[in-house]
Image (cartoon, rainbow, N blue to C red; front, side):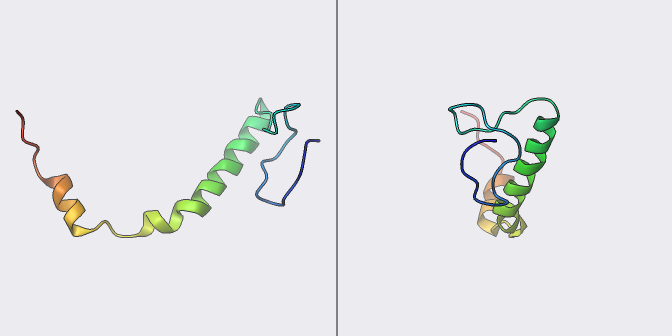
Length: 67
């Protein structure tokens, strides 16, 4: 197996020799994708649950002016 391990935050599977990155192929790709999905949800779930500010919604809904 590869390098250092810091717990559940590490991607599953062996690392490519000398890169420190996980090898991503075949079944390992599915495990990596699942791991990445969990990590991104943990990081951004609270942010995406916040309401969009009214001034930003107004700006997005305002028709653009063509020149």
